[in-house]
Image 1 (cartoon, rainbow, N blue to C red):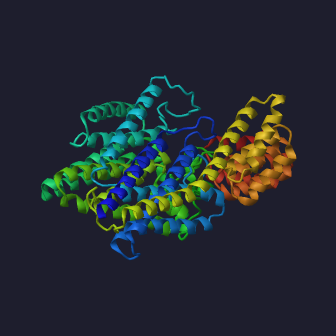
Image 2 (image 1 turned 90 degrees about the vertical axis):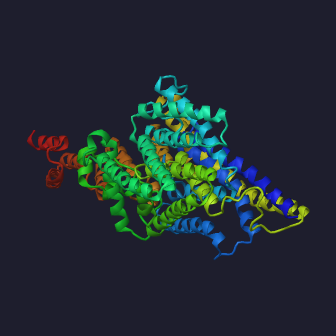
Image 3 (image 1 turned 180 degrees about the horizontal axis):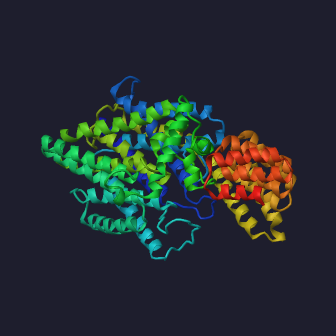
Length: 619
């Protein structure tokens, strides 16, 4: 009876495993060219659907093992549950719930993403053992081939898609050279560590070598440091742990200088120390301003943060004044470019600490287990640990991109499955109850499918509305840019679909409202934008857009009030102050114009704006 039950359980785990790996691959590779955001929202939809279906096997595992809340076996479930619980609290404390749910525009780091990633983590934990863990390497190799070949095609100018891309051409399937570089680095690492595994066939090892060559070439050509940093950090840890496993004293002796090199490298990226000439890049150094703003947000609201994925709404209020002078008054950021700081600043102390608890738990358990298993298993676990550390290294200087993060949570759950679960194999019936074969078949099948379908059906509905919002917003933008008279009806039709969709990104509603003004529906346009401002009064996109519309329609009094509101949330924007000063001059309110002039010169002297300001009063 036990054998029948175990065989049934492992058959289902095998199915879940392949579904998990195929799902991870599809999240990273999938793009939807007709969407307004062809990268992030489509990946979120795939992630949500995959995680929803995997929820059944996860809940059944808890049921089958009859896990007790305070038992050792429940700890890996307890940590992500706590993480999600803290996210729920922060969700309800967030001022704009739709952003908290979905995440910010072209980011999608909201509650839905993290709930799905937690399910991916648990699925990997439940299903991974030392036999099927090999498939993680194989999946990484296959995805690495596809992504690196596509990246090389982009570098050579043979991309089959003409992306609207302001960056380096090597964006692969992630939409940004930094993301593509970091993802290729993780796939490089899985391919590299796979070469040491006897369980990997010669065919896959040959493909691994292809991935190593093509991905490294693409990373270098991307001109992004993130990939190289990811690889370097991982290989340093790999050598350190390898030496530690052979000789503890030598390993520890190597770790000390390796740590010094690591710290010096980070300082060099920030233009500090002897390695700055080699590693410094402005796009890396600017992160110091992002991190500082994140710290200010956390100190202002330590319990709940400023709201899930609401970093962009508060950045200009908390940024250092030097930032606007160096990089421009209109330039902003919607993310802290550091996953830990992002979670602390937007979710608060409990969200941040629960995420750190998961991270350190995985790290400590994995390293504790490593020297206590046989050498063949050591190689499997060591490769996953080092690839995961590479993921963590890039997350310290990057945005929590869905296509990359899904691998981080997969690796974390897999490490825990191999370490905390002892990598239970197909032959081990440990901790599983004994049923009759007929009971296992009926109970297992019904329970898993019932839970999976119950979670999946609303997710499909959710995804449909989310996808429709993307497509309709894209069409609004496309037809508005053409702007012939006969497009008015088409723009109006798609704009109304965006505005009536309960899951439309608020920014999509905003651009649809602007398009309505352009085609002559001014009253409706103002009404919709004002409705958005009621929901999100500090949104600078809405306020700046409204100010421009008031300027077009010569509504000077309303433009003045709007620009004064902008100044509340963007206090270091000299460009906004300049426009406000001009309006005061045009309305002959000279005293107010002089006050604004003094404000501009107080923090933006020796800039083009200050020169134009002086000219306005000397001409």
